[in-house]
Image 1: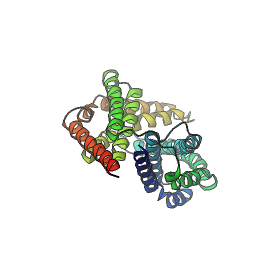
Image 2: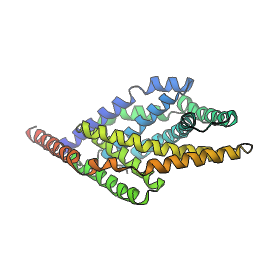
Image 3: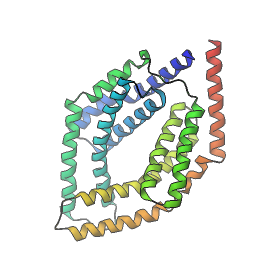
Image 4: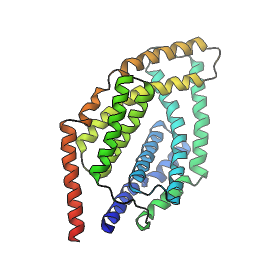
Length: 286
């Protein structure tokens, strides 16, 4: 049991170390420019680390809670900037013309959000603390009692299955948003096990499909938050146009079915069970 815990700690340490390796360079770029690509990359990296911590560590440990809080703060600020980038991109690709005034308001809002984010990255020690903590992860006795890769993935898959049923029946955007979050967690959980590339690829494609729906929802939320009064009619037309597009896209989420049941899932579950058995055999031989 101790060896399995040690193996789990090393796996987590390797995954987190691989993610934070590019953080210093990325942070330096973001303090200067905060490009949409860098915002997206850091946000994805933080989400992966948060998922890995959730799967592997004792969430009641005070230090783990502190690190998760740090990551949550950075993730939310990145999310604010990302929402504004998505809104700008969505409006540029829309068939409805957008006035310079509304575009200017979006740019101003992004400028304010990125100034807060740049301050956090340049002056606050949030990311430094996470990096320091991650480098000493192998020595910390905070790893959960071991749960097999198959059990972890099966649990995440059940959560996706439940959300899928609800979203497929209700066609409610809040349910679709929750479904996308669960799909992300399932994808990162499978990635964490190191098997199932085809399964991850299918989840990634589905995640992108759901993401386009949520991007539209996010854009509507941003537009409704603008202070423009002189272009209220234009904003209403934009929101109505986007809402129609979202409703049309949200009717088709059946691409998830092969990931819940069928050949893809059967193949992955067999691979996970073999991987778990190999790990146990390795520990026994040791």
